Image (cartoon, rainbow, N blue to C red; front, side, top):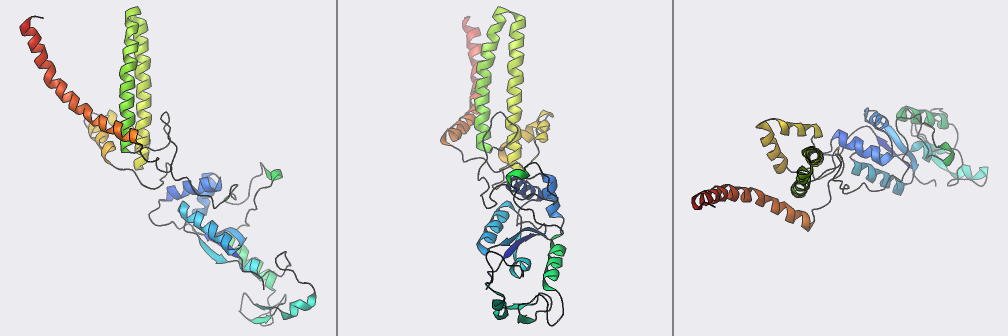
Amino acid sequence: MTQARFKIVFNGELMPEVALETAQDNLARLFKSDRTRINALFSGTPIAIKRDLQESEADQYLAALHRAGAKARKEPDLAASLSLVDTENHRTDDAANNASVEMTCPKCGHLQTKAAKCAACGIIIEKFIARQAALSENTRPVQPQQPGDIGKTANTPYATPLATVAEALPEFGELEVFSINGRIGRLRYLAWSLMLLLAALALFGVASMGLAISEIIGGILIAVVGIGIMVVSVQIGVQRLHDIGWSGWLWLINLVPVVGGVFALLMLVIPGTTAANRYGPPAPPNSRAVKVLALLWLLVPVLGILAAITLPAYQDYVNRTGF
């Protein structure tokens, strides 16, 4: 008896609590394809993403798609299971063996000896199966690319994965300080901001030494350091916004008087999404160094308050003593 074959069908449904853009991004990475072709999978029309699979293979494809956020389903592949063409998995030794094999008509359900034509409704079974497969898919499945096919364009709305479809999506994203891509959480945002502040103090101290040589050289060095610190600050802020699921362009709100202060506070308070969003998977867990630096950053306002209290008192003491 021929082993049952299965196909993976997807009609655009999403897994619970998964955003459309997140699922599209995940599928684009999974299939190694562009967004235009991936978007065609969400038209609402059932599309057979993969056919002629063993049950274990179908389960692997299904699990990978579910992790990516696509609510696909596994269905029996009648076109593969009931094909009258001999294959390596189903080959008869002689015509006499066919007489002992029974089959069910895919149209009317009539049980009969295996034959090319249904004795009850009269359809040509192979043609009927091929027509039903074409109607359900609207397109032929794409076979994996061969070395000689590199550069050819597929005629289907998606490209067959160039990698194993069952490979797990990255659990955590890569950390890149000098980039507007990726995500960072609240503690890492505080830690990186503190490191940037310390670097700024050191660099501005070095740049100010240029004033002793020349006011022009000193001014240029200070301007270069200031621009560099601003660029890195924006990059860190954009990654924090990505972690929340917001566009990086919202960082410009920080430049608005009063409103910018409130928005900067929101960036420190609002937690990021725990799962992957449209900007990628979450950042790796915080290290001990990140936690320590984040706590040290909280001491900065305290030190500022102490300085505001002690400096006037010290200046008054100096004025009274005449030093």
